[in-house]
Image (spheres, rainbow, N blue to C red):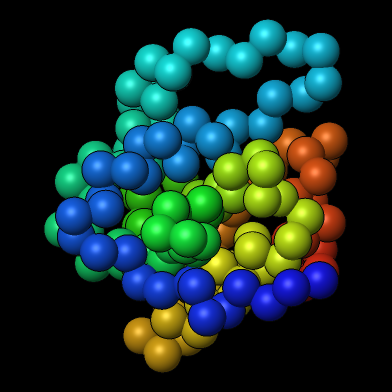
Length: 145
């Protein structure tokens, strides 16, 4: 498995608008199910992950790049409406574009984000994932419960 740690870096301010595309890519679509319209990311419960990103305490993001193209992103923010683990536990969003999945990119992104959170004094990271989503393997490997 190739290592992508060299291509994982903090997101640039000019790239923050791209989180909308990565938010859509993060949506798990089970086999045989029609993907939702892109406008689904404008629903309040999803839009909360990206609206004014970078302007709030707890907003951290990393991207993975290959040949000058962003191929993945992992970001988190404090979302009071999703504070089931506590008010100072950010909520994760992670996406790797389909052609690049299964190559260790999600792991590299998540490790970079977890390291940043630890350096900044955060003591946890929350996530929500469907059991049938193949990403469950990554989260279990990284000791999420």
